[in-house]
Image (cartoon, rainbow, N blue to C red; front, side, top):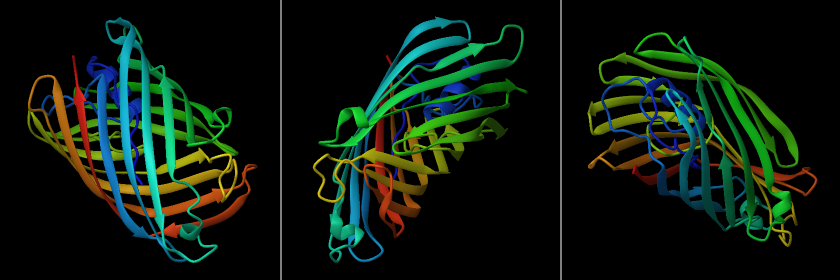
Length: 314
């Protein structure tokens, strides 16, 4: 079930754009000269996951809303330190299912995520290298969860090198804490490659859509219209309500690989509209108790989704 991550907070130079695209999972066109600008300090959107059958009987669907933004704290030629913040709301709807099945348990409903970040982009003087880092802290929990038990932190950091006007590439590493589970440590490769006129490949989508590592292929039809296809991996863990009938103070998990297409247009100089559609594959739901021990898990069928993103610059 797709999510949306923080955006890049403001326009910067091409090398910094690459890093911000990777850090915020929102491509802002670091290499291509064409295409609508995806750099925006304020953005909101909505996404609906249509009903999908859950193994063991029953169905699940969800609605997702998000609001995100950022402001610069320090800015110099090619370097920036900014503050970013975001809020997202997931509303799950379970139906049917026999007693004891995942859908029958209906183990959670409304999940809130609050996120703060401090993106750092730093040009290394006299070279084409830049350093980037994004420490974050977030709270992810169902309504009624103990706030102190919803908090995790993480960081993504690395370097990127500008080989040419068309190719910027760099290695990185990510560390993301998990509720009642081992932290995720993973390598990251940041790519912004314009391999043909109007065509680019990047490690962030060209429209606000999802969390997690992924890749997007973009076609800039003109300077105000972009078409994209992409895929990502997602894993969302969240604390449950202390009075949850399924697992008091437990942990819910939703995994998916959304594959999507997006249309991004920029009708005006200060705002942008993106429409996206796709399907979530490899879907899995999991319910753990408060100590992180598994209670039940179940797959669910491919889930089609539709979404919209609106962003402003000022």
